[in-house]
Structure formats: C-alpha cells, structure tokens
Amino acid sequence: MTHRLIRKLVNLLALGLSALATAIGLIFLGAILWTLVKDGIAGMSAAVFTQSTPPPGGVGGGLLNAIYGSAMMTVLGIAIGAPIGVLAGTYLAEYGRKSALSSVIRFINDVLLSAPSIIIGLFVYELVVVPMGNFSAISGAIALAIIAMPVIVRTTEDMLNLVPQGMKDASTAMGAYPWRTITSIAYPAARSGMVTGLLLAVARISGETAPLLFTALNNQFWSTNLKTPIANLPVVIFQFALSPYTNWQRLAWAGALLITFAILVLSIIARVAVARLGPGAGRR
Amino acid sequence: MRAEAVSPADAFARQLAGQRLRERLFRGSTLAAAMLLLLILGGVVISLLHAAWPAFSRFRLAFVTQDVWNPVTDHYGALSAIYGTIVTSVLAMIFALPVSFGIAVFLTELAPGWLKRPVGVAIELLAAIPSIIFGIWGLFVLAPVLQEAVEPWMDSHMGKLPLVGSLFQGAPYGIGFLTAGIVLAIMIVPFISAVMRDVFETVPDVLKESGYGLGATTWEVLWRVVVPYSRSGMIGGIMLGLGRALGETMAVTFVIGNAHQISASLLAPGTTISAAIANEFTEATTPLYTSSLIALGVLLFVITFVVIAAARLMLLRLGRRALPSV
Image 1 (cartoon, rainbow over the protein chains, first blue to last red):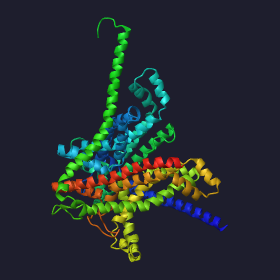
Image 2: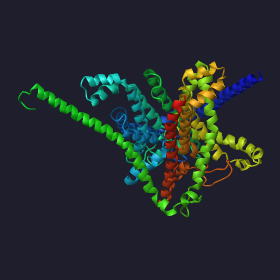
Image 3: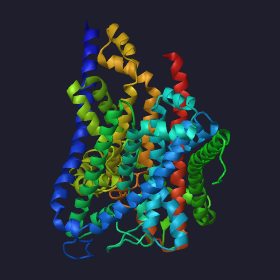
Image 4: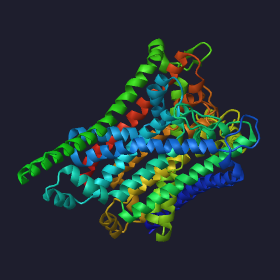
C-alpha cells in the first residue's frame, strides 16, 4: 500500500515539475516578447520608415536605409541560394538517392546547416571582401546565400521524397526522361513544401547578424550600391543597442520588433502551407 | 531547318537526341550544385586555415595554451576565449536540459488536447526568433535584475560554501559567464524541447499502452518506456543544441563583458570565441591581430564540427542498436 503511495507521489512530483518547467520556459519567453513589443512600439514612428539612420548625437532618425539593405540582401541571398539549393536537393532525392557521394553530401549539408554563422562570415570575408578590398552589400548577400542553401537543400530533398513513387513511375512508363519527370511531375507535386522551405530560409537569414558584421558592415547613409557597405537591420540593432544615445536605443528596439514580426509572419505562412500538405512534412 | 521532308523516324531520332541532351544538362547541373556544397565546406576549411596560418605559425601550440590577449604587444593566446565558450555552453546546457525535458514531457504526456497545439506552436515559433533579440533582452532586462538582486545574494549566501563557493564570489557586474549562460539557455530551450517532443511522439502507442496495462504510472511509462526508446534521438537533439550554444554569437556578445580573462567566478565578465571575433574583427589593427581572430574561428569550427559530427554518428550507431532491442 505504501509502495503504491510512493509511486503515485513520485508520479505527481515528476509531472508537477514538468508543468513547472513549461511554465518557467513560457514565462521567460513571454517576458522577452513583452519587452520586445513594449519597447518596440515605443520606438515606432513614421520616421522609422521614412528617414535614414541618424548620425551619432543626432536627433530622431529612422531605419529606412537599413530596412532597404536588409530586404535587398535577403532577396539577393535567396536568389543566389535557392536555385543551387533546389538543384542540389534534387540530386540527393532523385539522381543520387542511394549513392555514397550523396551520403557524404548529406553529411556536409548537415554540418553547414548547424555550422556557426560567424564562420560563414569569416569565410566570405576571405573569399570576397579581401579580394575586393572593401566591405560590400554583395558579399553580405553571398554570406546569406551560403546560410540559406543548406536549409533549402534539406527541405527540397525531404519534399521530393514525399512524392509517391507511383506518380514518377507512371511518368517514366510514358517514356519521359528523368528530367521531364522531375520538372513536370515531382516539382509541381512538391511545390507547396518547397515554397515552405524557401520561406523558412528567408526567415533564417533575415535575422542573421554575425556574418554581416564583416561583409556588409554598415552604412549611415542611403545606398543601393552593391559594391559598397550597406546598412542592414541586424547590424544597426547591434550597434545602436550598445550605443549611449537614447534615440539610437529606441531605434534598435523598433528594428528588433520589425525583424521579429516579419520572421513570425513568414514562419506562420510556412506553417499553414505545411499544414495543407500533411502532417510531418517540412519539420526543421 | 532543312527544306526536304523529314521522315517520321528521323524526327523521332532528333527529338530523342534533344531529350538526351536536356537530360544530361539537367543531371549535370544538379550534380554540380551538389558538388558546390562540398566545395563550400572545403573552401571554408582551406581559406580559414590559410588566413589563420600567420597566427598559428607564430604562436604554435601556445595559441591554445596561453590566456594572454594583448593587441598592444601583438601577442595572442586563445585559452580565455576557449574557456569562456565552454563555460557558457555548459552552463546553458545545465539550465536548458531539465527545462526542455520538462516541456517535452508536458507537451507529449500531460497537456490536454486544447493546450497541446498552441503551446507546441509557440515553442516552435520562438525557436525562429533571431538570436540578436535574446542578446538585447539579456543586456537591457536580465543583466540589471541579476546585478541588483541575484548576484549580490549569490555572493553573500553561496560565496562561502565549501568547494563551490568560489563560483559565486565577486562583484555583481550583471554581465558575465552566468548571464551569458542564462541567455543561451533561453535561446536553445525552444530548439531542444521541439526536437525532444518530436522524438517522444515517434514512440508507438502500443509500447506505452502495454506499460499502462501493467499498471505503471504516467511517469513510469515515460521514464522506463518512452525515454529508453527515444534515447538516441534525445542525445542527437541535445548535441545539436550544444552545437548551437557553442557557436552562438549575438546572444552572447551583448552580455559576456568581452574581457579576455579566466575567472573562477561565474559572476565575472569573460569572453567567448565568437564574441571576441564579433567585437574585435573590424577593429583589428595589425595583420597578426586579424589572423589571430580567424585562428579563433578555426578553433570554433573544429569544436562545433566535432560536436555535430559526433551527434550524427551517435545517432547512426544508436539507431541501429536501438532497433532490435525494441
């Protein structure tokens, strides 16, 4: 009888602790979101979207140049990374499904997927910035592309593997070559999952800070030149948050709220797309 | 285009040749894209080693055994940064593991159906928030609280404990190893608990039901059935979380204090490999300084590569061994 009581107590204690752990986790995460929304909204104004970043000690100012720079480098990064990622994912899922080379590439992709992004920044610094002689928007976009690629490779491969073999066999039986089967049958069937992968990649790179520190750097002024440093939200947040000026710190919070909001919206859209595709698809 | 009539057989042959060409082109471009991934990893290794060579050849083994980091005399040793990286990551794992496990248990076994999905989705969405957000929150919100309330209490109450006392002694700066460990933990909790929950959900219901059928409590089923079954996946998730903590830059840079020093106290400021690179890279004045920072990057890459590779290999090994025993 007492044994049974002890077991019940242990059970109650363990489950109580796990509920407590969830509460602790949610409280911390809630606290972060609360500060973000409170200080972010306090820092919001029309000027955020209409003016460029202020000089040291200057009054007011906005984030227009940084928003443009971030959007431009993210789009460019995806434009470079997506075709390569989709093709490489296609190789892993279709042509080289069982080959030894594919296992190696899958492993390399996993390593790149979890490699610290600051390392990618150093690599692009050596590869692009040093030969060019200065920091530039294009080097930032290349760094982001390298970070986006493994995500896209992974989701493309997973999604293509979900396409029923019977559909592909039917296409082959009609006399289609593999390229025709892949582009006309497999891609359309896996489309929403692949789009999800792209959205996840956009979400991943739009908040990346470390690799931009030594590639795109920062620029106080409006710039659209790919060959010169460019302002971008993450680096502006980094510099402004650590500055002594209160208007800079307010802008940092406004920028932080903007990025987080954009990423949450992207993740939710991606999630809805996956939900339509079926359970278990597109995790990670 | 030739003017003369083409026989159906010729037309078919030409079309076939066109198809073959496109097949070769498409196949070739997918292979090239896949090989580019190999090339990138190779390029990362070679270019970083090349750029770090001046530092490695100048200081040799002393680069990893000395904790001197002096830009004025151009003398660099990475020990303090390595120490900070390991201490903050270990702290983060100590804080994050029990909480993540608890959240995963709550989500799979405890939460009522209507709560399961919203909490699960919230945790997953939070894993997508960029790390810089955690960093500024740590600096502006967490650090003052630690400085004013928690750290003075630790110093006066835990600082005199035998053996572990020195961990909690010292002036309350608010920023340092402890703060960085906590911020890192908050950052990796959503990641680890999402992976653990996914792994827990792969356990077949039949196994759990047979446990319940024998009269086991929820906790007993969890600890004796679910956890052993999903051990390999759990270890994989934990290792990937550790890999994140080791390489994380922005969440740490704000709250570590950026002091190249090794302190017994967790309350003291320090630095990590990634924080040192992020802070000093664009300000490095001599070629040897830059090279030393890239050498730090090489060390970080080696450490995280070993952790990630070990996670993958362990998953493979355990995965095969776990199968027959189930």
